[in-house]
Length: 317
Image (cartoon, helix red, strand yellow):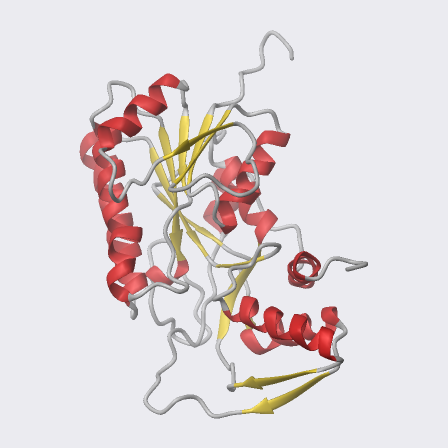
């Protein structure tokens, strides 16, 4: 290290055992960051860095401040929360309640660490087909998850404006990669293909899957978060994080089938009666993110799907 280089920030990751959290911890550890992994329960597989079991939906916020001070944390990344497999009631503390308590923690500290919060593309709600959304586009979420994530973003941006908190929200698209949540569309399809692989073939019942959405390789998402730890220039409080291109959900499933090489019969089924599209179209403008973080996606979606499948069915197994 040269005399003029700055030490790498020490990072705490909330939700360290989750899909994004695990990958982020691995990357930060490889890059030499001091690391504090925080999750509700001790993971089955040891994470890099120090680990603290802590549930911000239940445990006192003041205790979290003690941990952050003790480990001299410079940046806290909130990768906790989620929607897959949760009821509407369970999503409230997971996506909003814990953010309220996190802000209570940070604003009560004499020198709070920087906050990088993982938001969601679903905060915008229904996109008009063909529209590219910037950070200033209207946010009208159509799901409970989107509404909760938007309120969390609003609380954070209010803390930035009114209390001077150093914070950034990354509105993230649909992430694809190794460790895909089993309740997600691609996670479910991968599970069925794995069963079909053992049986010599699979049959997948698919709805039209006409929606075109923002998908992003997991490692591109992680690299953007890493770039947000100590950006070279001042960032706006909210940035879009995606591939910058709408891709059909059907195309992603077909890529997964191709990568699996499992003989597959697709049965077309109609969408459930009365089920409107959660989002028929998502396409984010990522210009501001590229400019603020010096980041751009560098991996293809086929690579993301290939890594998803390799984690489900490793070669030789």
